[in-house]
Image 1 (tube, rainbow over the protein chains, first blue to last red):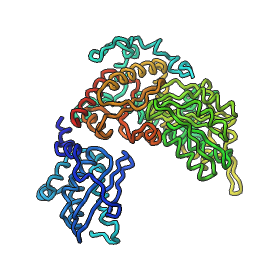
Image 2: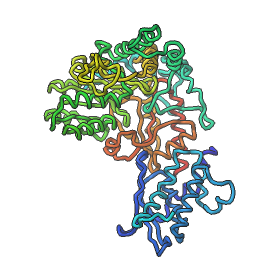
Image 3: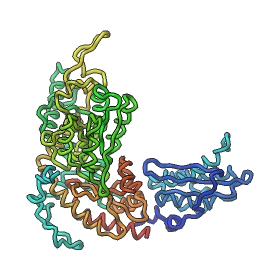
Image 4: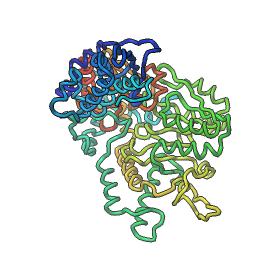
Length: 149
Length: 441
């Protein structure tokens, strides 16, 4: 049963049950939809910027426990960060879930997002875990012609 | 439509499955149901992969609608072909090529017998069901259908029996019509008959739904179509391994199936069609092996089935498919159907009784497939928890999004059974679903 606990850590199950920032914003706010056609997961991420800083972020949609809890934890992790910081965090997160994260150092910067480390054992679920992040990145780029990278 | 129409009823739970269902205790499944008759433990020993452990648990393979596992005889037949008989076919001045050609054409004969076809000339090898349906759309459809002509399908089709017609609609202006299904997931026969009276020029229907397990009364549908002078294509991707299929008895005009879903290899499948139809149809791909003569001014086509097999075919695949059909028929398709029915009935009873679990698709006549939803849990999470228990199922829309929508779900978890599955494995599935509910409860 160890595999089960690694994939579905308690924090993940809890965020799946009660997702944070699960609400829509105005249509005029920046938003982008993320879809995983393979499993039918679909969610929309909204984001408000104050200058270059994420002042508010929310999501809504349907998906598996991994995609939903990942979106929830993402919203708690990116609030107050600059765009560049958010994108760097996304990169770290991708490294984590694909098992490419440097052994030391990098993990601390992920904070609670580290509960998704078990995903690297289940490659098929990487798309679930990163769906909301892709949507957030698109929302951030949405009205901007230039990527911050 | 009578149940007797469908071959599995002929094969007969009545004749072969001895275990009476009444009084069956959930907690103490009988040890000698149809499994004993079929000799399921012996059969399991024929499939090397079934001895595997996955994630530390014995493999319980319940994803047979996606692809079935292969018996040793199939694996050996393919290996033997490459080790002893490999050459290209139909161009043999040398001994090996004659051997390979004989093996390949022998496989065609084998498929013809399996389908009850009048002649091996009616058997075209394709990559699978999908390619077979595309062949009909692009060859027969483009030659004989006019703008405004209709192709009638059902609301429970796999994407492979939807998208080829949409492509054809873009190319030629034909119209795709869809016969509705009931809440239980059965075809609405009255609506089907009404739709037939329009400008329908082809009926193309799934025999056994891959998403919800409904058996369509294809003999009746073909009869109705014929009364309007309309040919019928049967998508037999799922039915070929679970129902007895006799194209003469079904009265259809085209029948498509895939090797890999009947214990054979991937990459090989079959389009069966009545010979006069194949003769009228133009080639859909050009190349070697499908011509009589070629010049830069003009080429002439080989007779069917070669006309539809441009390029070097999947020779070893055909050989493997023939071995699979031999294997299946040695065991007996009626016995297989009866055993699978026993396991499915047991699964319906046990999974259906779990609190918080809804069966998706409850047609009276069904086979092999159990689609279900666990309240509040996404099918992917159901699949992931079961996977950790060693149980392989499919989670998703099963390449049949329209029927998912019709049944009011975006996706389901699906267990699908084959001849080597047992009631014990259903018990493992049930324990896994109980675990799902604990984890996400």
